[in-house]
Length: 213
View (cartoon, rainbow, N blue to C red):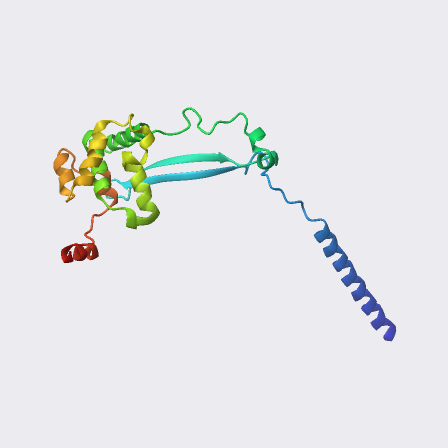
């Protein structure tokens, strides 16, 4: 009986040693860590941005949207960290045609509005005017995106390329005391993009402060 117990004990001890040895080998044989990303699948970062506009007068829930995808190549060689001036010697910070201009963006918006049977020639300036009138500072990241999307002054480097009608629309919105002034400036537009995706509400706290002053 004692011999059997000793045999079992030795067997258990041997098993424990084998398990510990195997675990030790696994730990010692860890896969090396890589700072660069492997070539092929997984070596790019894709950023997808877009916005959707509900389609009116349709019983089903339908949304018309525009999506923009941006691909950013991730580093695949350590020299991109240690010697960036050599790794990126053939690259330029500004690639010709790589950036979308303000004029191109406005043309895309006008085309999308026309496909929704909305007059782009008058409704886009109305949208810009309303965006200029509206205070987006309290809307966080979404408010900043709205400003960049619609206001031509957010791209000062393209000031000479942007048509004057869009600059005038922004000025009207800046000087307006009421949102209705934008609508009077562009009466042929029944509904703008701002009307579709936002609701204008009175800030009672600000109104009380102004009344007090």
